[in-house]
Image (cartoon, rainbow, N blue to C red; front, side, top):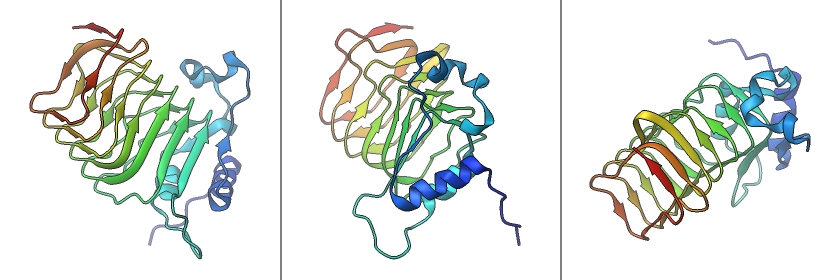
Length: 215
């Protein structure tokens, strides 16, 4: 049997916030200190291991059930790879101004809404994922590829104000994706790399007002 993981003080606080339904907010309110592109300089008190976050997302609530359980993190650096491959994730994930060290893996998972806003991720591996709600990447910097081949999103795919950077390849690799709501890349969305949407079904339309696509 695997021994229990020893939690840091920050990780214990995260679990307490989730148990009480409160957001876990490490944002300072100082723009330079909260700049996700400087997250390598953030102290350990703002760091959470990805395996601890995965455990929090997968854990069902004891006692009374919430109709819309959610895990909210702000101003946190997530160390290691968030692996939810094939999982049935019962909670919504909301990350605000967070930094992920490694590409999250959500292939073949079924999740509630995923909102990663004003954050940094080095890509996303979410082939065949089923999202019951939105996949929202508003204002997020993605320095790699979003793999969404044959994904299903019952709400919207939102990329407003985001910057995707993968100049030698695809930024969005999403052949066969089904989006029941719209795909939104408005308000300064930039893609330095190609968008691949062969065979996509965007039932609510595709909106790229004032977007900049370089490929």
